[in-house]
View 1 (cartoon, rainbow, N blue to C red):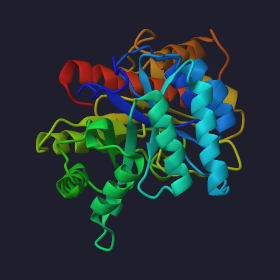
View 2: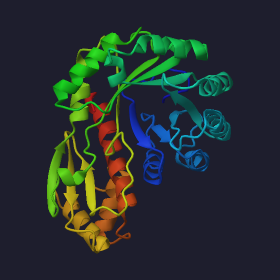
View 3: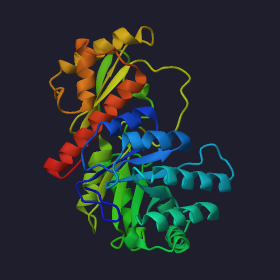
View 4: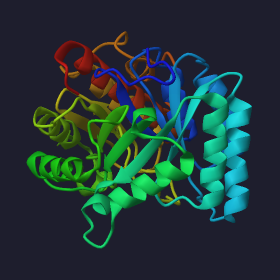
Length: 342
């Protein structure tokens, strides 16, 4: 159990998710007490309704990073953060996530939230900024903590290596450099290291009418990073998503993304036309494959089998994304619980 105000246990998993319907559905179906979702919120009014349904846990934290996606003025943005946390207070143990670039109004709002809730704060820093010779991330971190009148022992630190590319060893080496440059790395309440490896464009790696395995390089990079770290680290990733936001004007060619121990196996259909028939065919192929874990492994697996057998409708891009995230989350949790690595 990730109780408010306490360090995260080492077998906890932090999936970084966009606060959208597929992601809400995926965490709603996960009953594990070893998951702490980090939701990127771009629509606070929707989040006020969706989060209590997806995460009604007063004794188990959820991290919320409000993003000023529409570039509204800072005072309005800061007020929306306070409104969101006030709305969630009766039902959810939400903790604010911030960066070192927040403006004074936002920091003032977060400080008030921290005072009321007593759960501290999550500070999210990007690897590129830590290693930027022109930046002074250590000073920026200290200034942010001073503004909030807090300290590392009351703060969870997320080192976000989501934009770092390369092999697992390259990603781990960069994360290691960042951890050495971060101030007081052993003093933070929790240190989370996040990687991302799923491709932004499936079409670049998986041809139509094919099945391909894509390596979970993010998990491998974390294992290497953790092995040489000076303190215990907690794993985070972007599941089967990516750190960026993109607007797709049309539905993708049907595909099912299925996490395994060291890879994602992607089943991709032929064309956009007649998606329902193709989703059923993809699901039938997947449940017949040797790597399918069966319907009891996760709600995502159950959904895929229901599509394959006709017990449910064929689904669409959103519902299959939800199933893929659910499957990924359960694979990581199972591996952390049994192997101690993601």
